Length: 259
Image 1: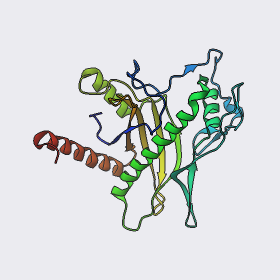
Image 2: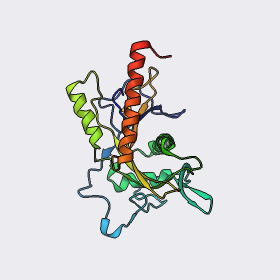
Image 3: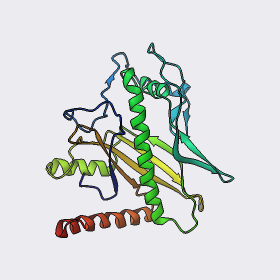
């Protein structure tokens, strides 16, 4: 996207992605699968007082049966590669929601989603999270000491309606210089809190999800901007080191060409 001072990642959708388009949608940063709000939803679809949230992911417990009159979707859940906890040397990983649970989450939010698209949406969701975790580990390797165990994801929170300060800055830059910077906001945001086993320290990472222009053959592309939040002096230093390194690399490429 030509504007990141942190770790950015552009990825094509997984093989077999059936939603290829011959031309980009009018708003290329929107969710890759179109949804429409339910016309009969006049308030928040989640009854907060009676629906306790899981403190690890800020989501209610989702059933494996349809919440509406739609057909039953697959209920099998996939294990991720994202470490959830380490207990007595045994690692546990996060488990992705099943297509049925994913659809139920959309129903609770008041979104009318074509049932036939849900399994594809789950594949994209899982694919992007795996790539995001890989980028988080790259950040963590920069500060790890010899012998350190791999960190694990302690908890997370989706914040799709809240733009990060960095996303707001680049949106403003795009308004000033639309030919140089991205002009669309991210379609999603996650905050991930990882824990470092050696010290028990927790570090929050911010992930902005963007839709990028499709490839020449129409395959959708997503850009992820992943970086530690500016919650500590160490995170600020890491952001500066990585940012200046990326700037120097870009200047070197412009001056001498990629080697």
